[in-house]
Image (tube, rainbow, N blue to C red; front, top):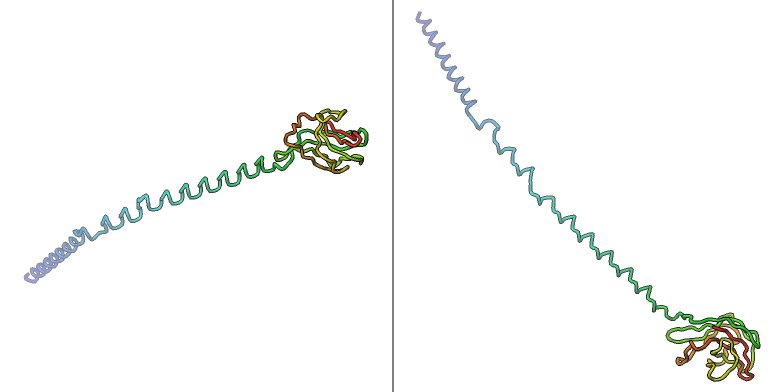
Length: 204
């Protein structure tokens, strides 16, 4: 009987100790709030990978500078290659003669060919014969401007003498005095003064 009591007591003690030990172990495992991975700051730092800084990679002036590649003066200077005075200056080629009047020679006492032209160049006036000009040779030949379209008489008030005939063939030029009004003259004449003979004339 005593053995049975002590045996039951021992079993009861062991059960009590085990229960206390188990209860203590279970209570330790569930009551530590910091043991679980519930740290709200561990992986949720909003600034770590979701940086909302608008200036970090979106500098609007870095590649959109309107003056960097779109300077309108860099390649579109209208005066750089389109200067209208560079190649279109109407005064640049003023050495070219401007024709005023022209006429073809006709022979009278002698065969006379070619074209006579009144020209203006650099403020001067000239009577020019072209390369095709031909006339017979003779004594005392002069080149005249005559007021008659077909010269008939040679009074002093009817013509102006431009000088000796330079050559009986080819192009040549005779300067007209500044005080002569070419509008008053109707023809160019090859005249033999010695015999008062018209070799040929060109009516303007």
